[in-house]
Length: 263
Image (cartoon, rainbow, N blue to C red):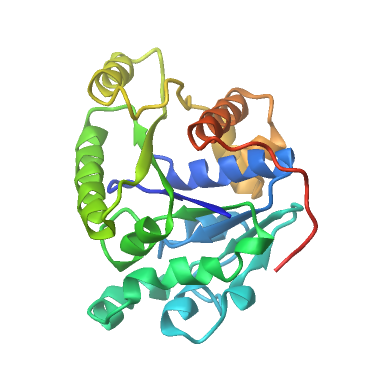
């Protein structure tokens, strides 16, 4: 199982949309995908109809060691696509457990226990550095950084890259990362100039495509259907399909034959 994380130390840049949309493309191509919601706000969980304020058990129980990964995996209406929901109680973990040894590897160890059942795990991270993001970065093999194409988003990217360098020192190995330009509107000067800045300053890490502004993303989330499943031929759906092609090429992965098996 390959593990990707979606993170940025700025909110509202399209992290959850990216995680869900990529998972939708993967599911349609025959991959078995596990989404992991590590954001206490629980946007990904809400996408699939789970209330993070009341759900039990959840990813929170993995950290408290009161549940196994198998018991917190939920089905979606879509074959080969499952998810681990977030609980709002995740927000308390830094205060409760942040100083305990080994807490940075909880998610990695949990995913190791179900690796035979999935081709990919995609972790949706909170927009702040703490125990949850450290877990995601420790577990993942490829980090995706969605960056809204506006100048205010560049600071969030700088913070994320600095965090990544810190994690790489702790891991004593490099962590591959890809920058994904989001909310691109070619009609806006700020959007085109920000994209140019990203391509000039992060030439080796940036995906050369863009995720466009598309109202269909909002409509899809309201229905709880990944846009790449609901409208795969639309602008947004095609963009995420192209992004997946790029990421698979980056990781030198091939499309697997559909396999049986469930957690």
